[in-house]
Image (tube, rainbow over all chains, first blue to last red; front, side, top):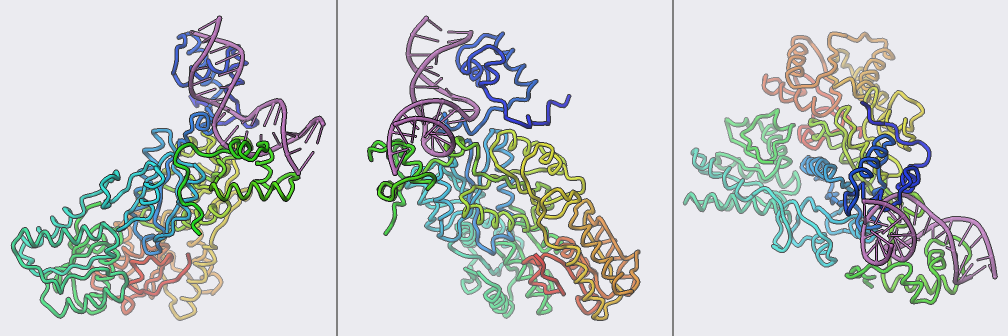
Amino acid sequence: MDDGDKIRASKNITIGDIAEELGLSKSTISRAISGKGRISEATMLKVKEYIRVHNYKPNVIAKGLAQSKTYNIGVILPADANLIEIPFFQSCLMGICEETAIQDYDVVVTTVKEDDITFLKRLIHNQKVDGVILTRSLVNDAPAKYLKENDIPFVVIGSCEDNDIVQIDNNHLEGCRELTSILLMSGNHSLALLAGNQNHIVNRNRYAGFVKAFHDSKLSMDNSMVFLDMNNNVLIDRAVNQIMERHIDCIVCSDDLICSRVLAKLNEDNYSVPEDIKVASFYNNAHLESYNPLSHHLV
Amino acid sequence: MDDGDKIRASKNITIGDIAEELGLSKSTISRAISGKGRISEATMLKVKEYIRVHNYKPNVIAKGLAQSKTYNIGVILPADANLIEIPFFQSCLMGICEETAIQDYDVVVTTVKEDDITFLKRLIHNQKVDGVILTRSLVNDAPAKYLKENDIPFVVIGSCEDNDIVQIDNNHLEGCRELTSILLMSGNHSLALLAGNQNHIVNRNRYAGFVKAFHDSKLSMDNSMVFLDMNNNVLIDRAVNQIMERHIDCIVCSDDLICSRVLAKLNEDNYSVPEDIKVASFYNNAHLESYNPLSHHLV
DNA sequence: CTGAAAGCGCTAACAC
DNA sequence: GTGTTAGCGCTTTCAG
C-alpha cells in the first residue's frame, strides 16, 4: 500500500485539527504521538490510525521551538580551494546524512576558510543547530576554539591537541607507521616522504608515523629526504628532482593530490613506476586507482 | 572593536527581555529590528544600540514559525558511489552556502540514491525547508517529479526535459559542440567519443553536442567510434582497444573519470599522449591537470 | 487517563 | 508611533 506520497496540498494538517476531528484535546494527541505520559491504549490507537490515514507529520520546527531544540546538526566543511578535490569530506557528509536521517535529525552545512569562521558564527548565532561536527582539524583550530568558548556541543573528525574535545579519527599515525614499516621490512630501506601542510593534524600524524616506523626498525631515516608542507606543485617537483638524484627505493606521499603530482612529474621526466622508483600513498582516489602504483588503503 | 564574539552563555536573550529593559513593547522591538511599520528614529536607535551592546541575535526559528517560513533551503546531493569522486557537487555546495549565508538562509543537505528518494521525502515532510535545489538531473527524474507533485519550489542544476522547471546549467551541448568543432577545425577529423551514463542529462547533451559539431562541419562521424554508457573500466578498456585498432586522432571523454581511465589504459598499453593519440575531456580535475593532455575548461 | 492553560520567541493585524 | 492581542504548531506543567 502506498501510504500517501502526496502531502496535503493546501494547509498542512496540525495537531489541533486532529484534536478537533477526534473530539480530544491537543495534549492528548501530543501524548499519543510522543508516547510520553499516560494514555489509554484505545485513544492511542485511534490517534495513530488517524495519523496514518491522513499522513500527518508533526511540524518538527514547532516541536523544536517548544523544546528549545532544533533537531539539526551542523556540519562544517573546509572551503579551501584545493580540498575540493579530496572526496573525503563528501564521504563524511554522506555518512552523516545517512545517520542523522535515522535519528530524525537534519544536517545543515556551512563552510570555513582557513581562520575565517564568519559562517560558523552565523550558524551558531542563528541558533539553527543543536551541535556541530567539524570535518577537519587544524593546529590551533579556530572553529574548535570558538565552539568550545561558547559551550556548543561538538565533535571533530580528525584529531586535535585538546583532549577535552570529542574526537573521532582514523589512526593516521599508526596507519602511516604501518605502511612505512611494511616498506622497510620488504627491503625498501631508503624512503622519501612528501607530506602536505603541517597545519593539518592528519599530515603531522602521518609524518610522525613515518618517523616512528624508522625508529622502531632501528634503521636510520634520511632527514634530507623528508619534505613537509608540500603545498604546491612547484615544491613537489623540486622535491622529486632531489629525490631522483639519489637512490631512493620508494616515495611515500601523505595524500593523493601529492601522489598525483609525483606520478605526473616522474612521467614527464621519463621515469617509470615501479621500475625506477616505487610510490605509495593514502586515500586511494579513483583516478589514481587506474594507475595502480603501490598504494595503501586507509580511508 | 570586537563586537562580542562571546554569546550569552546562560539563557539566550529574547525580544521580550529587550522590551522589558527598555520599557517598550515586544512589537516595537520587533519593528525596530525588521524595519517594518512606523517607528520613531529615537526608539529605533535606542533598540539598535541595546542590540549591539548585548549582541542580541533574533531566533530565526521562532521568526520562521511565526511567518511559516524556515529560512532553510534544501540541497539534494546524489549518493551514488562513483559520483563521490567528482568535485562538481562539492563545488556547487560551497557556492550555495556562500550565497545563502548572504541572504541569511541556511543550507540543509540530504541525499538521494538513484530513485530512492526517502531522504528527500523526509526533509519535505518535516517541513524543514522553503525550497530545494537539485544538484543533478536524470532522465525521468524522481526527485523532480516528487517535488513538482507536492508544489515544493525547486530548481535543478543541470537540465531536464520538463520546461516548467526552473533550470540552471552550463550549456553542455554547446560546450561539447565547441570542443568538438575546435578539434575538427584543427585537422583532427577522426574522433572517438567516450560518454558516460546516458541517464544523466549532461552526458546526453555532450553526446548531442558531439554529433552537432560533425553535422555543422559537414564531416562524417564514425558511429562505431561513439561509445555511450561507459559506466565501468572494463567497458572503457574495451573501447580504447577498439579505438587504437583504428587511426583515430583524438578521444573525447565526457568526464574526467572516463578520461582518467583512458589515460591509464593508454599508458598500460605503452601508447603516449599526445604523440600516438590525443585525449580531450571536461571538468579539469586537479589530478588530470598534472597530466596536461589536451583538455577543455568548462566547469 | 484526559483537558485547560501557559509558553517556546517572534510576527502581524488591530486599536489607540 | 506604540501597545495589545492573537496566533505559528507543538510541549508541558498542573488539575481533575
